[in-house]
Length: 481
Ligand SMILES: C[S@@+](CC[C@H](N)C(=O)[O-])C[C@H]1O[C@@H](n2cnc3c(N)ncnc32)[C@H](O)[C@@H]1O
Image 1 (cartoon, rainbow, N blue to C red):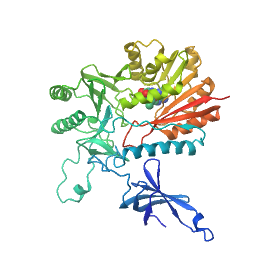
Image 2: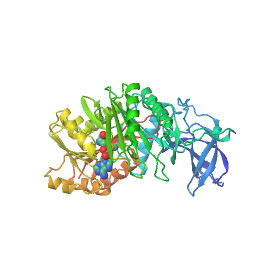
Image 3: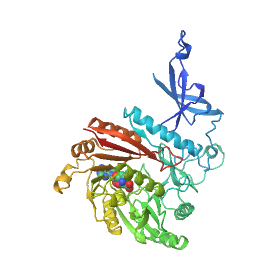
Image 4: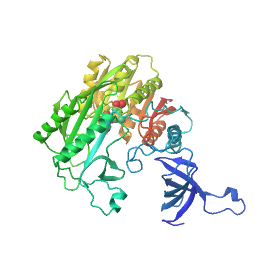
């Protein structure tokens, strides 16, 4: 067996990040053939139930990696993808998999990750909460401009001259930071979002506007971010550019106002940094308030261009309700909310807690949290600017913050800094509710907390991102010593 070989493989299970698993016998045990050792091959582009031809890409001692090149027998779990860009776009990699099966695979994967990475086996695993909407469920889309448009095979193979290959506005090709798939529709946000996307492309193309190059670090256009309230009629268009161009922006702004009365605010974020992030060094509000408002449950939240808000509003409510159920408070508890963003969790749970202290390092998010406190007349929550890559103990001491009964943490994908885990152990809340969009780093951190005296009681995934591999999971830990 060598790299490049093509094997016929039966796919029997599913691994993290959408790889089918096939187990083959490399060496037969002659005395007990049925007990011959199985060798695992992870197959990209294959689902359980498929029979595929796959090309070997990498061979290791205990496993190999391959890529499906032909499907000989289709898995019964496969469905027809809705989107014409499926297979190329990095957005919805499981759109060809039945949604109920997606849920089952996500659930199985969380358990497997907790078992393998965390070495955790003794906990209750609650059923995954399905997403109410499986299309048009996002309230935010971040599109990128690129001066290298992804070309289809047909375009490359055709003998004709390729048009517009230096202008794209759409979504990145997986693994290619500089190439963008120029899309004219996406089923993740709303129809209106697609219209704004297409209008923005034709406007700037018509003006021969330049696109920021990741190689030369010159050029004007960087990102188009659309934020749309789910429960209200607020719609924000945020154009991220490398510099100011007041004349061009004025023209764009006037046309957006005329053609899209639904757009309630237009912002121009100026990002002079080399890194490709869709947040600016400063922002210019062209019209409207510069914010949108949305609700989760009974609570209303202001969201600015650069603050985090859960992207699936309907599922955010399920996520927060799960956290609230897990915390199971009497009403007088001191709660710490680490990575508190715009204060959405503290405000959502405020009636069930005594006092909540939030810790967050993004200034616009903290500013939003302060406004959200006023909007909701929340009298028992205060956010503290805190960099959780450093110890938060000095902030507690300086501000005489009492020790917590309950700690909620909702870190970014990278999980918690080891210093934060240590700090949690030293403030030893009775319960920890850990929300995560990356069960691998969550299991790693939960293991550390369990080594420090906590017990994992239960977990519940909440599907926030249908058709993608992304898994959101809530875990409850209790102090046992
Ligand atoms: C997954 S979001 C959760 C926000 C909030 N809990 C919610 O549900 O909307 C993670 C948050 O962590 C914040 N964050 C990231 N790195 C941080 C750090 N080093 N210190 C403090 N907060 C950080 C981000 O700004 C973001 O608001």
